[in-house]
Length: 175
Image (tube, rainbow, N blue to C red; front, side, top):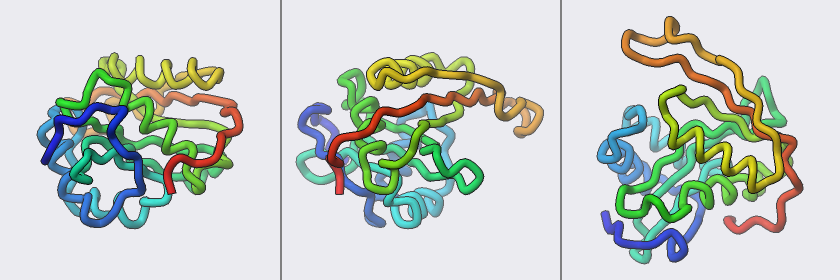
């Protein structure tokens, strides 16, 4: 995977099936996200492509992604399931750009809240979502969503972050 791109040069686009294995490798090599099966990343790039987003370098290889969906039980929310950025593209605002681009996609434009779950020890993700909220002029509320006892041993509790109400978004940057 070619990853010497800056976030400003990365192109935001819809995920494609061909991106699934590259996104799986990005998560595997990044070391901080829960690694799921390659099949799940194919589903993100196909069944959830309308609500998710990819950042691609000059060679069109994924250097970042947001896996997102609209929960059937909470249809006004856009739920961010995973945000991943290749190590060479970190620290340049790409994760924040990806989240904002995901919200601007047609399938998410009517969402009035952005939701995500984050472990308390993941300070980088906490800072990312609080920064997105600040940029959007939205409030953040937090609550425990999944207790540690619901996971196999060794997994922290997950806190739900609700960011909203979201402002109206401009024309989508990503098809």
